[in-house]
Amino acid sequence: MFNFSANHLLLLSRMEYRSCVVFLMQDHSARVYRLYDFTKSQPITSDHFFYVSGKVNSADKLYLVIESVKRDIKHSPEPQLRLEWGGAGAKR
Image (cartoon, rainbow, N blue to C red):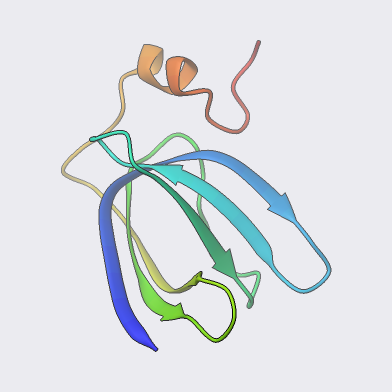
């Protein structure tokens, strides 16, 4: 296992499964991350940027497993940016 961290992430979508919650998040340089929350306890919403850290589990597939999430209080997305990025909960 290796550590990972990413900042300035905005939620694109959230899918809940029996064993985990999977978040698709995008950073400011358009990279998209698929993050796994096996505790189903991370408070990630589409109206704020987040710092995320965790572990890379590379047993047979690559999983970015969330260990901690902090809200990025230095940045807040503009309302039109949230809709443009298609964040979860955005009205269409």
